[in-house]
Length: 251
Length: 250
Image (cartoon, rainbow over all chains, first blue to last red):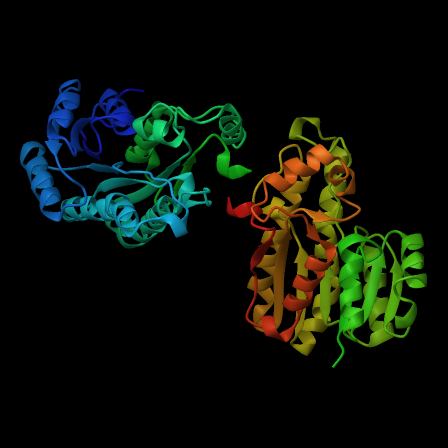
């Protein structure tokens, strides 16, 4: 299969690296044109240059004006947006009583407000054309509590239910909205933060023991799930929470 | 006012604790167990002073005729049955492990004891509850109905079925004034779990997975059942509630 997204325009926030760029590569392989949005515009452009018919854009997902500017530019360059991947996100560690207000607000801003602002930017065009697919990034942390990740769990829980709510409003108008819920993906920047190099082997083994599949995720594991949800193969899939977690939440 | 409470698996573990909880509060109990000797021992020890509050019935809850007879015995003794506590359950023998290793007969046995029994009991008790326009059904499911227990496929499947059966009961009978609730205990210290909890290493590994860092007791289960059966829980209907020290929260 290499034409599941033929001719479609897919915008990815946080698209310059990690799971975002891996998703971009998978979408490009399936024939999509990519609009990669990243905090650092030069990174976004450099990553987009590796893909056919693709462009990079600077954009802080927490900034309303920046999102408007970025999505206006994407629409001007590509004419339409068929798919949005709300991938931009941050993680952080603190139990609730030790979390700072700044830490909490930043977590909510990037993960939740970012998903809101990017979705709000693409929805009018999708609704006008009566077609579109949005994939939000939930997490296993949106389904179960992860020790010492209070704000992150709250933010991901918000995205999970925002996904259901968006599906309620837009599925009847041709726009499907789903969430992928990744487990720990080891090799990305966030993965390295989650599994710090200073983590002792015992803690690491304990983390791994929560994964029935016996390994942590790879960016492409998540990317392929996103491609499916964006594609017409998922035409009847909306409001769903797609666990891509090696079985972590099954036990 | 005393109520009539039908409890299966009443001769040991959670069932015995549940029966005792209701007896102490002055309710009447129809105590059902497949282990007649066990019921006899409970009668001699736990239930000595409650002889006018309890009727014993030895029977297999997977058999329609035994179930019908037990419900009839309860009605004959106390006139009606107000509360069903469908507690009888098994995890299956050692061979009831992964799907490809579980003997068909053992799978069927787990499903029969854990699920078919509830169907048979409710089927026998519901017509009279509908007629009176009231009744409470407390099904003892498990956290294994919410997440999978590795190496316990039949048990996991059966408890998932109990949770959905509970919702089906609510869907069909709530309008008749009947409430159904699925209680989902985590790891509880009972004869059923003893063989695992008696191994120190295994016990520690289990405790380490529970945020509250302790194993639950049969009294915890009885207290929860007592609450859900009572009028304070009048708006609980169809819910599956974890009682697990936080096990399914992480």
